[in-house]
Length: 203
Ligand code: GLN
Image (cartoon, rainbow, N blue to C red; front, side, top):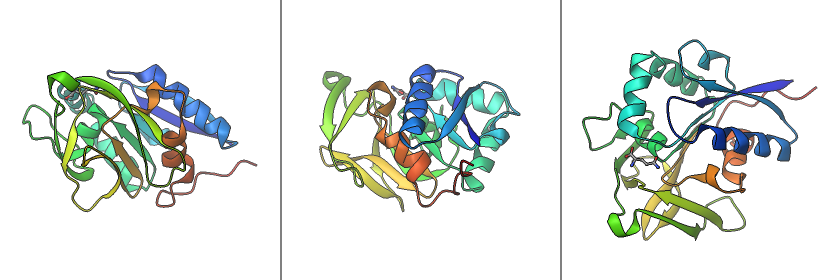
């Protein structure tokens, strides 16, 4: 059985997410077809979804205009996994602290956009993530911080601020796990997450 993975492709590092999903699937002995989502009608076929970084104002506007937003909500409501990174996290949040972002209200967090300031616009650091044995290389690019993690489980902090959270089928990160070779977070979200619907088993 081959799983269908969707990468929200309205903007951002779509190819990198597709590659990370493929690597994670291989590491877990799963087969995936990865499709890019730029219009409605495709998400319902997806077993798992990634929502990449980019510009959250643009992404949220496109998701509404193309009528993809309700499909992503239905995907999560069905317990299927979603990895939301950087701008994707902002879009998935309850409160983006910015009315130009129309959030999907999927993850009970409040975020602050571009919160690391100019000097730390972009940086890479190594962080500990709950559930992963070894530190994870985290790439932050004009990243948001989570100012209120609500009832989500905080998986990682940087500088005492939450930068990765987990709630049911959703994992959200301030950083870009798709920009390194390390696909453990994709693996955790899609193939090891106990609170998402079990993936169809390979025959
Ligand atoms: N700064 C962007 C925003 O607020 C997010 C940046 C990113 O996804 N790398 O939408």
